[in-house]
Length: 275
Image 1 (cartoon, one colour):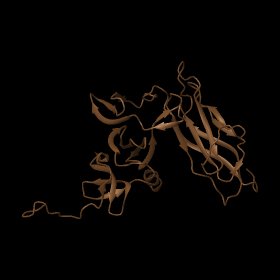
Image 2 (cartoon, rainbow, N blue to C red; image 1 turned 90 degrees about the vertical axis):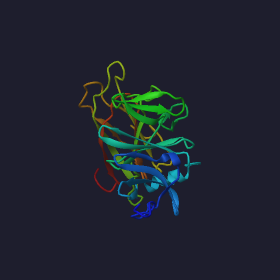
Image 3 (cartoon, rainbow, N blue to C red; image 1 turned 120 degrees about the vertical axis):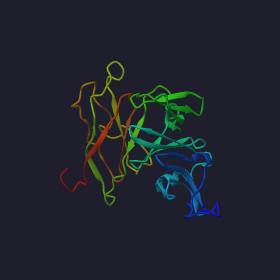
Image 4 (tube, rainbow, N blue to C red; image 1 turned 135 degrees about the horizontal axis):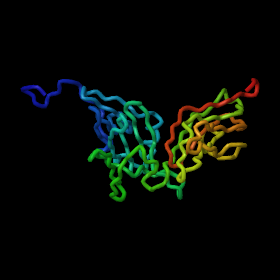
């Protein structure tokens, strides 16, 4: 403040309180936290040194947050990796974790895959420190200290990281759409000899807008090879994928290799035109 009022404000206050005391974390001159205000809560905001705050969470995420049994125990952490600034927000009661890339303005739900339950748990690493020229992450469940390294292709449980990418629903005035081909463009030929010789990509799909899922329920859906080591010309293609009115495609990759997804191409028509 300014004399003679040491607590006087020389600008408008930020109209965002905090919904979880430990959700606040700073990086790159910014602070992020799970917001609560006079009008509501469960939005993630980013505050800057200029005294401004803007909402960075999406409507879809906030709908999910409101469904959690508790958000008051959320924990925020930040780290920098490969030139990207990240904000990690973990909800212990809900058993879910979210990761925000500040530079790309993109959110990703992260977690550790539990094959027995067929679902993700919260991401085990929680607390971060950069020391001894490495990224160290503390595990909130068992006290283990992990080293985070983008060249390591396994998760904390030793298994490959299960990656999921899901597209929006494809709808055209609720007409039946036919799918002759789906091609996933990725960097192929990255299999590791003697470890992951023949990495696979799984194509799942839903014809009811993502409510229910099936794998292999339509002809030629299922797994495709992503290329053994050096097989750089391998193409990942599914043909004759049937039809649907609210089709959602999903790809799943869990082999312990680097995965670089570039794009996906779909041939589709409504039966009144040439494919």
